Length: 146
Image (cartoon, rainbow, N blue to C red; front, side, top):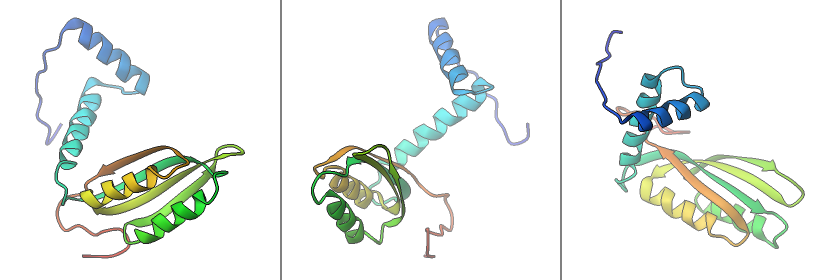
């Protein structure tokens, strides 16, 4: 393998057994693939510590659309942060519940504040922010260039 460095990892037998079972259930064909993903996830989480880091991510929420004016409050919050919200997907889960996925970009601190604001609205049953930093180098943000 060109451009790959091999390393050794020591694990207790029980931990290795649990790891192998876990990665098998997830469909990994090798330990190396799973370890690479774990390292990438760990590095991505470190980027969440710099509030001024430019991030791209999603806010996923499940809410009860029957709650009075909830749809208007969610729409107003999205419009107030329109510079961050690039697109959304709306799914009807059942008669009362909807899922909305917002694809956003901006500084980490702004995305956290927006996610906290929108997921704390009464009637939002669950909400989660997931982010990653775009590729390093000359970053081209979604929808426009800097």
